[in-house]
Length: 284
Image (cartoon, rainbow, N blue to C red):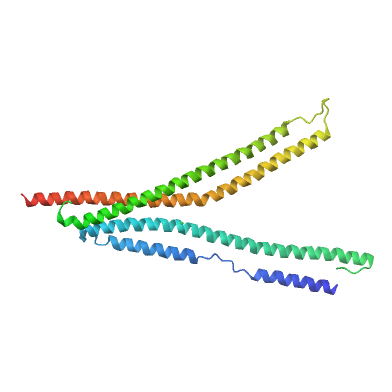
């Protein structure tokens, strides 16, 4: 009996030791790092916007394109931030779950040990036995810069469109597989429902216990298969999420390239208008 209490005390000590291991706070180091990176990029954007009207035309153009790129980078960083926050929270929840599971296991162990000990002691008492993710020369420099930017951004658009086309085909194929698996699951559900509606009577119209048992078994098998297939559907949808996230990121990169082309074209048009006005004023 003394050994039983020693074993119980060891189990209680282990339980209390786990209770003391409560360092399960969310790790925000990754979150803080990205938030600081976003602040740094936003600070760069603000600095590029400072004294904008006082800058030369080409400097304004460069600043505008840099701002567009940095704004896109901020958008992508914010997406990354959400992913990191989600992952940090997920890891926290898993750690918390593991921690709680350890506590429950130890608690259940103690309860089971006590119950078993009580039974063993009772038996010992009863039996006495022991227990146990251009136009003019002044614009030559700008013309070269413009052509370089346009070529680079068009190349970005072409490459992202190719990747998007590949992802679109992949997503469509996976969605078809998911739909097929869902239809299969639905068929088993309708099958189970249909079986449940059947009358459990024999050929002679009497209620048959054997037929009821057979019908119940077939119905349970259909619903069980429905649940198994629905779980597979959920797993397939989960695996598709990162692909959709990559598609979203590629669309942001493509839209940013398109916006940069639109911005530089708009700026070139405005610069030409201004040059024409300046030339007209000289000729008056």
